[in-house]
Length: 339
Ligand SMILES: NC(=O)c1ccc[n+]([C@@H]2O[C@H](COP(=O)([O-])OP(=O)(O)OC[C@H]3O[C@@H](n4cnc5c(N)ncnc54)[C@H](OP(=O)(O)O)[C@@H]3O)[C@@H](O)[C@H]2O)c1
Image (cartoon, rainbow, N blue to C red; front, side, top):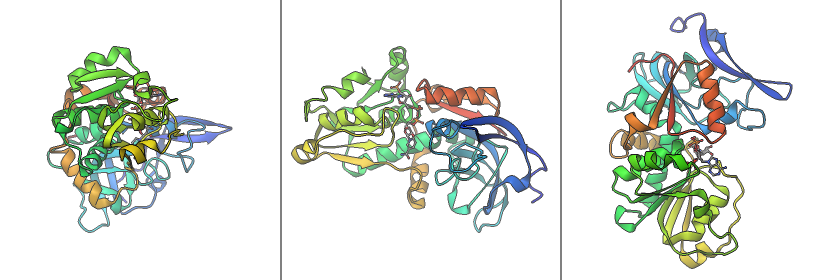
């Protein structure tokens, strides 16, 4: 395909002797995987899963070498798909992108048409990646909680991992929708930042975990967005109010869940699983439509997004930062740039 230059830059992660080498390389058009749509990547972002895909033992990379990057926004340069044409502004995330199929950390990407989402007119490509996989997951969490009946009048809604990608976008989203947001963080110096994003109160991680020896704690949360899992999720289940729900998407605090059945059978609470990867296309399109509108988080341009330029050292450093749990907000990666 002539739409792709003979050489283009990509960040490549390759398993070598028990480790993973991560370096910028020149790729050729034939290095791109099969797919009906070729995109010139403008922007990508840094998610926890990207950190996992670039480290030994991360257990998410399914191919080697791999171009990581679980999300991207850019412009179509070639298409064999009905309804998608060169020049279209698009978003791609989820499915195998950046784990079993070359992802967004390259100047060009080629993907199946079914993975392609049109960029909503009210979002720039940079804003779409300031949301990215994390913001989409926060949006899906809010949609699932509201489908179960959550409304702002119900009371405080907890967001865990609040300074991270899913957490910070959820805080900004819920605050903008009129919820009383309680943000949980392990970063003592982030209290003012979280309040600016819209948190009514900020609590420490230990307070959310509470007393793990008791099957139930006092009823506190009308709902919760949790991307931490482990003891944190168990603590939330113990302290949800009657008939409330937690939308669970992540495992930065651990993948094991030690709970009893009591929150479920004595308080009717619900554990809602959130999967942004295999989420059906109609839901994906609808959530993106709403992310550009009524789910758009407060602070999307000013507070949430930190920008890094290109595929070099700053990106590699950001991948280490996200794995260490030290990220604040969302990190967008300018690759080709553009609107
Ligand atoms: N299910 C899905 O489709 C889906 C989609 C996207 C992400 N995820 C998952 O959601 C999680 C968050 O992703 P992300 O991209 O938002 O990551 P992130 O930016 O690194 O945010 C995670 C946050 O979790 C908190 N945290 C980190 N280590 C912790 C620990 N040991 N104990 C308790 N809290 C800890 C930190 O926030 P504080 O310092 O503020 O506490 C951190 O900023 C990941 O597990 C990711 O794989 C799942």
